Length: 268
Image (cartoon, rainbow, N blue to C red):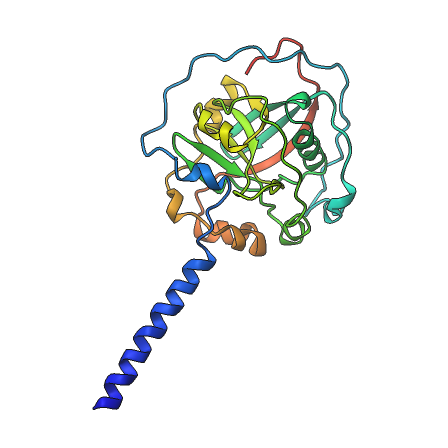
């Protein structure tokens, strides 16, 4: 009888340890790590007040690489080679399962981040990627490749932090990162409201979606909940099939392509 009781107690302790270990492996909050705790639980915010006009745009037109007919651009497997300098301003058209929106990038706001974004878009990194984290009244996050080999190639391709020159207003795009320095890579979030609290945490915006485009962003599927969402490591390792199986209602990016410089009078 004593042996039976000892065996049951040992099994219980083993289960507890395994559960804690599994939780420890997945406990790291998805980027942006720090602001996640601040995510509001209220419903989506109303349309915010207009924001100031943006800096004048340059007149140069970036050349976009042709979209691959299938699969991904093999240049993406050489992350260290994709370091082309971005134009002073450029625009990116996102065609999604919910509609289209335009991102306008001002390189002067965050040159390092703008250059990284330019190279990723030019080589179609974001094509077929899902909006895997949508927190109502806070952020929309994307930027893990739909293709595991590409995700692996960029896993450690981090860029340095840079000064926050713009506030995290509604519609502004910023790289996700952890609490550790220089951990920006490919993941990006769009602010769904004015998140000035992120400014103090080093989240540096580099572009914005205008008011018309935010009507599309606001419609992205957001009912899975932040705590019931997919595991980022599994997205990287298994790709889009993992998301399609477990979270089939998530919206995704069909294509993200360079469309040219921003108009001089562009406003978010």
